[in-house]
Image 1 (tube, rainbow, N blue to C red):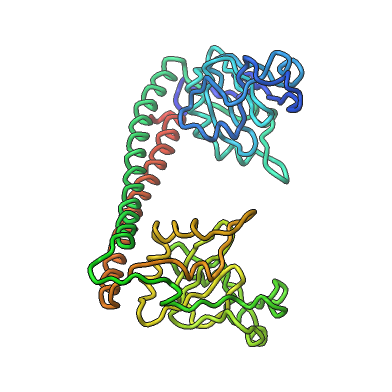
Image 2 (cartoon, rainbow, N blue to C red; image 1 turned 120 degrees about the vertical axis):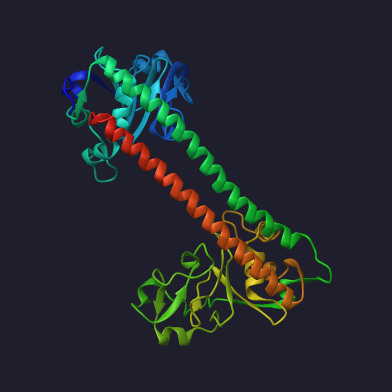
Length: 400
């Protein structure tokens, strides 16, 4: 620690204020003039500063709860679900019980405190206790050590971090935009392939160029107690990977005897599997790396004939156009749901098999390049986060 810095506890240099929630069923407590914030709302914000909240409380609500108004330029810390969201209120503000308000003394600049707490979020999490979810108590927070220089030195550090973090934020915004653009470019090209009919392409339906096979939904349907450590793959939606393959490490297995008892839903080389219901409706995979297995009732096997390249079919089903077709046939009320007969009605334009293979190779090359660019941008974002952590460490170890 640098000379001239004093070691204190948070309790020495801040008043720590608990929050509270007025009874939600009493309308007279809500919609008043007092701003009132929760951890969930804090997590949605990109700026540390806040002057207006989603919900407000009245004088009666304040009086009939443990909520207290924090003076402007206090630091608000979410102390549960999760621990570590931070905000600076620029107007009088109360919080719910999932937050702690820190009112700094005259010897502590609020922005210095904000940056310091940002630098120790991991530490704060380790101090949390609880079985259902971790919570940081006011007592534990007050015991946290903080090293404080004189106010001019605090301001010097704040000025350096402000400039550096503004630059990091701009760089992150550019990297995130580039990441989105790379993905959007591939999606746009994929969309154009299946919406702009090429010369000589025939119009057909999936039912005319594919066979569909549902899983066996009868009395022999495997239950979880019948899974075995190794055996025949028992494939469900959760096994479908983002690259269109099936997970080997997460696969479930059934015995040979159970597999033999199933009357349908057994995969063959060259098949695809397609999700028919739930939140992952339309999720698609080639059966790679498996050549043997059976599917759960949430999936249907799609088996293309020799007029249709299976990878061309995969790109069709996962394209924005293919995913858009789901809305035309979704018959689920409480939960999204399709039938194999509906999927068989999907219309597509189909070139000769040779041209399909050429298109597929171009799409595969573009997908690989897109993934390469996305990896670069994600590495940049990770490096910027590490730079931010490094600057904070230097700032509060006296090395900045």
